[in-house]
Image (cartoon, rainbow, N blue to C red):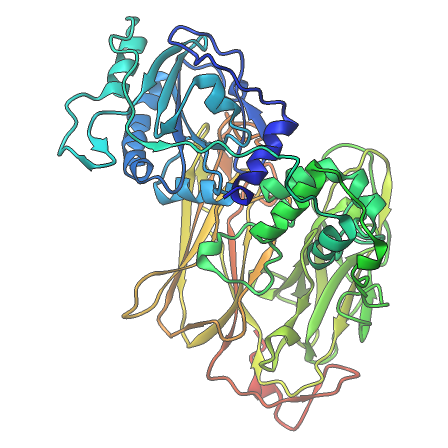
Length: 600
């Protein structure tokens, strides 16, 4: 079990947690509490704002009493929130990830914050031993109650109803200006496990033998010279120079970036580290950081000689002008029409959007444009940091994307500042199919626009759905929201089947808008299947990215407004186009090619 709790142990050392023989008592004032939110950001009790009562409930995703108690907390939150009572679920599960923690909030429709006590400093500061133990602080942050929620639930059994609702009574006493009549109660719950510290006798990994193979598999595709990441991890010197940051993002699972709940996978482009890989990296950082013998080094990864990840394109189109990005400030989206016209229907197997200065491009979406304009249904693909280009050859089912005759291409670009004036020109590369085309790539988008996200709401729900009119194989899903986006879950309700969760993104991150791709043939859905997406938006002051928690937020393309885009990419199971394409032009040959595919 020592390995399982290692990540928490090293962060305990990193933040200087010290053991104390004295348990904090009723009446003690707590100087400060620190924890991490669902995105891995370091937060404190101050971020919760001034409240009349702070209720810290210690939880894990595994403790059975926690699972049965969260509905009680949701009910209390509903009844006491307007009286300036702030409930916070503090996760202390050694195996619980930030994704697990965020998913638990969605599971129980809990709108109060779920935070991670990564180094167990909150547990120590508040004198907590079990889950779901509760500590209540008053406005001055003095402990006024510690103990159980009520006396109904126990590990060995439960009463039909509680005989005393201890937490509720404590809150009533506090809010009505009385001394809490029962300030401490026993807690019958799951003991919190303290991780074991690093010991001298534990083996220390070496860079060449243990660490470099992991970095090669998981990291260097981005962390290398002239790639998307801000620094390289291809050498011992690189890794040693960024060691502490490496340990932190690995424990938090912020890197490699991936936000899908693994319970509903798998996904073919999942870059996540295994538990063993995370522990090896962290142990190396927190031990000797030994270099080891260079003879043990794995072979360096080879990347395509081309600057294009799809290989050398058959067609490259570049913006006609270079954009200048200012050093600071907010930059509205830029819409650009590329200087090229498709004279015939053109089939594409791979597409890559390539900025010559990726540091200034937050994301870029591309759609084809006809005389009717552009819209959701003409979307082709996008570019996001850490994302992969569209390469349909990975599905090996003869699928390709068709750009219709007389169409041109439009880019929607979101630039970001770097602190100095920058310049950027974006090019787009296309690879034509070399195989017979059997299926045309299709997509749907769920795009509700008639919402008004109310001020202060920390989990405002929006949902949208559509019904498939043919048998399909789903290839992937993609979610787009702005800075208030908190989570999005996709469901499939097929006729005569149980409802299925296709994808859940519990801790959506605007900075990493990733596609989630299914393995070929993994998700086959019959005609009549209802696809639904449900998202929540955090318009509260606790959201660190929220521009204005007092504003009612409408639909809008700019990031100070909000969007709900749930994309699904698929092929029709019954379609057999049997088209041969000229690999030099992407144009299909044959006397009746137009009738074999729709022109949208």
